[in-house]
Length: 444
Image 1 (cartoon, rainbow, N blue to C red):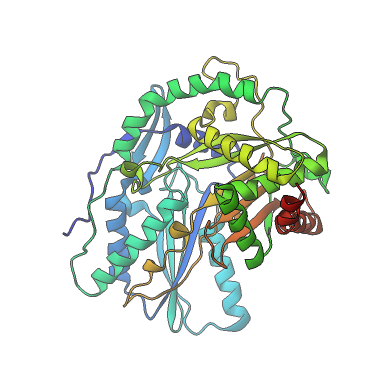
Image 2 (spheres, one colour):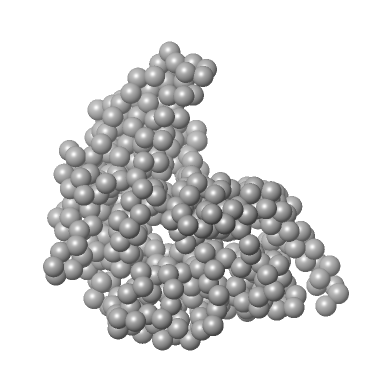
């Protein structure tokens, strides 16, 4: 098996999430929110011809990596850009050490991993290789109109295999592409508009009279006027918290995501006195075998209304059912842009808090490490490098849903709105609520 290249469609209709991301990016182009960075480290000296050949091969397999979203008179489309236009650069940093090296790497990281894309003038992907004394670093980024966190895992795994093959002079041995994104887009776009129309009435009723703003006071009110702002994150607990969340999920026969989301809403509701908390959640469409390997932004936005009960134990099952309900009814993208198909959404742009879950096997896959290309550190830096696009002020991020010490729960927050101590106190309260759950269960 020697398949590398997939079918090369030159353009296809943009999906609803691509249209929405593009519109948001154009509204606040300086935010950088839609930049999805990647970094990794490889031992030894880089084989630059093999590296560029592998990079071109991965773009041949997944042409969506080169596709820019354009708006025409007849609708939104994606147009594939020439590979030659991709910003690719090799920099020699051998001999640099100490503060000089740190400053150089930080500047290059900001340039390649944080700078917003100008999709009108360049492809939605870029990469920089920095050769150090005994290893080389790969800095780069995709725009989220062409790649999501699950596709990043596919990219790094397959790129590693391609690079190894080319450095050894072998023909790559990769499986055929399961479904090209152009095929997926052509199949989903015709039904997407009707699905959005069908869901509008449901969400109008579900969110009637609900407050969509962050339910607690912010520390720096002046920051509310800013459409974007710098971000940081605070970890929630450690291994003991992860194991407790796993035990609660087992007892309630639900996901660990449902447990932690229940705790998050429970703490916010008790602090604010609100009976319900509304969050926005990105969700993956990869919930069927035929879509699992599709490369591209297969993500929708959905709303989640959590009705908080008197105890955490009573809140978990309704939250779990609300998650399942939201998965079956993704939020119409037009509601988030304020333009419903009937011209009147009746809803604001969206809540100021969100949650998301990254499956561990697609975020930190040990199979990325190969015998001759030793990837020492794969660092998916998603929302943690900010700045975040308004209206997301506070984000509950879960990387991992398994009984492992490295299951990671974090609160990502806008630094221009919250003091670190405020978020640390909220994280500590969430952790304590989890650890106190057995006591609540015994007393109920």
